[in-house]
Amino acid sequence: MAARTAAPRVHPSRQDQVPVERRRKRKRPEEHAGTKSFKKAHATNDLKSEIRSLKRLLQRRDSMPATVRVEKERALQTAEHALQKVERAKKRSEMIGRYHKIRFFERQKATRRLKRAKKALRACEDGDERRDELARAVDDAEVEINYAIYYPLEQHYVSLFPRKKQKDGDGAEEEEDEVEDGKEDVERQGDAEMWQMVRQCMAAGTLDDLRNGRLTQGDSSNSTSTLPDPAQASVTRPAEISGATTGRREIDGEDDADSDGGFFE
Image (cartoon, rainbow, N blue to C red; front, side, top):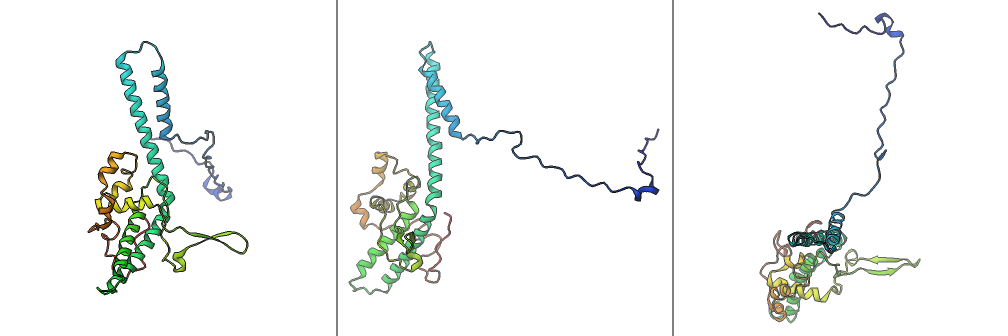
């Protein structure tokens, strides 16, 4: 038996007399309608809650079997270690975002200083008295580049070339950038101890360890065993500096003197 088709509501001859129905707009549901507004729980909250629960459980002086107590103590140590790891990663991310821009611009400035020093050294004759001074300037510029690149990411960055603040006519303070004014021959500042550590790591080949905080975590055995004597480091020059003076391109190029790397590392 054939299926019945639904009869039309209006006869075809009167279809043009029927007004056209307007299509109703479908309302979009509100994003937060009927839901509670709350912040997404961070991984540290779960770890802290687990640590508190384990500590309360271990503080009870009931008849807990020794095997269970050992298991809970190990779980507590694991949770505390995981919490330290998460908090360290969070701090590292914050420090990278906070000082990324200033490190980039100081690396550019140090690269330009190195190019000028090398150019002056090449133009200097063998018997010139300024040759030793220019050689030291080249060496210092190499350390400046590595200072900006390999300064520990988890520490507050101490600027090598801090901007000077000057007051305008209204008394408001404005920052003066020597790079924009063309005055790049400024006095180097920065952290003196970290400067020496960067120089030592250049000689020892441990710049990556310094950048990732493996030499500045308070472990004296780790920091002293990998760093050479400062007197030897002052006269030792690395054949190649990773990511700074060589690698992507030759730093002696004069045609691209104003373009120094990319913004992101």
